[in-house]
Length: 314
Ligand SMILES: NC(=O)c1ccc[n+]([C@@H]2O[C@H](COP(=O)([O-])OP(=O)(O)OC[C@H]3O[C@@H](n4cnc5c(N)ncnc54)[C@H](O)[C@@H]3O)[C@@H](O)[C@H]2O)c1
Image (cartoon, rainbow, N blue to C red; front, side):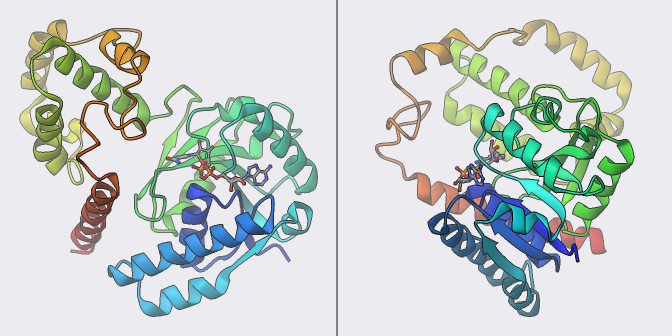
């Protein structure tokens, strides 16, 4: 009987995805290359479940049930025999993903969807050697997958629309907020917007208009405060499209429209300033603690998810 979600790759993303699948009440099997990896992945998935329960995002009953629904395997073939849905979250390498998708395509009946959590590759290319590319689709969970609600469901050139819609419906039952992306383009949907923000943010620092701290503050304490409830297009409707149009005509000619990364960023990389890993990037990381910042970020996400859940219920 096919009643398992199979998550292939139990690393950073796979463990969070597995946790959400189990919390949705699905039997979930985490598959990886060896037992050391599956054991680590399993432990991480349990930690994700515990963190959600401790922060009131799931009840103790839900968490206990989820822990009982999680299992692991290093046998891809055996696991594939039980799967009604497969989500691949292995290394971000086209050739490796292509070969795994080819194998899965041969193992699985053609009505079993095969999803990839790829952040940057095209599902069309990943499924290039599949006999049934129509059942392949990107499901791009955002890090941390057990907290961020967004999942981008990206259709490849050959993905069946009904299949993609079925995956959207499935992910809604996981308490995710899936968005359907109808074309397989670089940056999917959200990263296209994020990259445009990064381009302008770097350009502002490079031109001396403001410091990195102030750029981040302007986003975090300004627009980001309303974003959980109110995206830029709803904002335009609220202020009036005529006003929005006039602001665009005034500001757009003056903001960055570069087609390549800013020289300022390129120079930082060339001089070895890589951010947290080297101790210096836009910030001085020798005096800051990234672990603390991750903790603060996750606390904020947890509260934001709670509030949006509550507002939705009202
Ligand atoms: N980390 C992020 O911020 C992030 C966010 C969104 C999407 N992604 C994407 O998710 C995928 C996984 O990323 P990650 O950060 O979890 O990586 P990771 O390195 O933490 O985990 C990858 C896991 O896949 C396993 N693996 C590799 N080849 C395998 C194979 N052939 N069969 C089974 N298991 C295999 C590895 O052993 C490892 O445990 C990538 O495609 C990545 O681009 C990552």
